[in-house]
Amino acid sequence: MPVTNAPVLVTGATGFVAAELVKQLLDAGYSVRGTTRNVEKAKQDGYLTGVPGAADRLELVAADLLDDGAFDALMQGCEYVMHTASPYIIDVEDPQRDLIDPAVRGTLSVLEAAKKTPSVKRVVLTSSFAAISGEARDHVWSEEHWNDVSSLDNSPYSYSKTLAEKAAWDFVEQNEVDFDLVVVNPTGVIGPSVVPHVNASHQFIVAASRGEYPGIISLAFPFVDVRDVALAHVRAMEKPEASGRYLTSAPALSFRRMVELANAEGFGEKYKFPTRSLDNAFGNAIVKFAANFQPKGTRAFLKMAIGQEYRLDTSKVQNELGLEFRNIDETFVDAMHDLEAWGHLG
Ligand code: NAP
Image 1 (tube, rainbow, N blue to C red):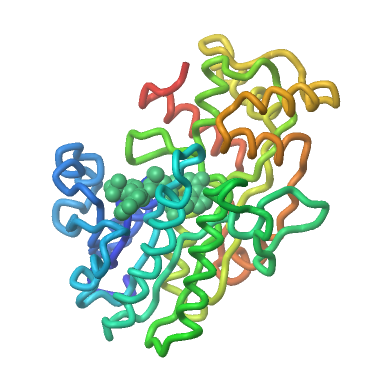
Image 2 (cartoon, rainbow, N blue to C red):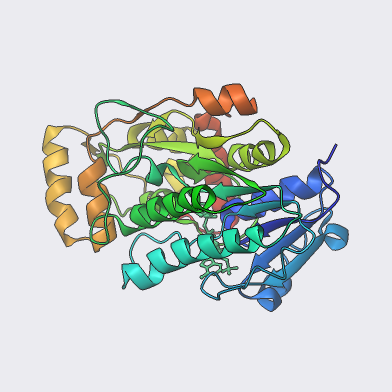
């Protein structure tokens, strides 16, 4: 049973994560008010408006994270707000302008609007594992950790997520507000997409299918299924006892395993997945050197992640929100078929 009859406000509704969230909310019987910077385009594209239930219960409204007060009127009457909009771009021209400003100012703009709107009971914020960890370290990551290494120069996307989430927690602590804040921190989100654009988290798979990697390199990154991430948001909204941060991730998937899965599905014959083994000390040295010739964001990512292992404690989201993660091998295969269906592979 829906916990509210009022529309659920979802910011950045056209995004990969948010579109799946909109789909699940509509499926569960909710009405949704989704924001995008370009309502006309979203309507013309028809991907979101084509989701079952959208014709009757999805309203698309315009809002930009950088426009002060943009969410004030849109939040009227809402009890729950899902703030997912935030630029997810790895290589940017101007990190302050392109990442930090929209992430932080947008989050504060949403929270200011919630503060002025007495009907709002809870804001669910889409943060990221990037706000928890900026590097692989020899320990187990959980909700108690914060990324203390990213900066404007080093992984600015991760920095934007860290600053935005910190600003959100500071806001609810320093202001008298009638709503509570719950945060979802997903790792790399993959899986079937409601919308056609290639999300940053899928770019690695697409690049691998196009032969952009000279070999199987020593990367193992924690991923999570987009359907699980959306469900974590829905549960974070529906469960009154939900609180704090929720690290949301399946176990890490290695590049080698991805290639094995791709080959087992026949993608190896159709596309240019690497075959040469570079997931060894020699390969690591080559990748670290070659990273110097990549754009800044990719360079920082490769240098940080190569040869590293991530261990995560996701017991909080499993115990408190009852989330059972899909098998990440199956998610990867679903993602591959979906990327192929959208025409992105090879
Ligand atoms: P996405 O597909 O690129 O969607 C991001 C959305 O944000 C876009 O649809 C865009 O909507 C909106 N947006 C960007 N800049 C905006 C601005 N200035 N004003 C208003 N809206 C703006 O990215 P995503 O992967 O779904 O990410 C959604 C959220 O999940 C983000 O907060 C991201 O940090 C977080 N996250 C993602 C991953 C992942 O692996 N994908 C992992 C952890 C956390 P319009 O263009 O329609 O306005």
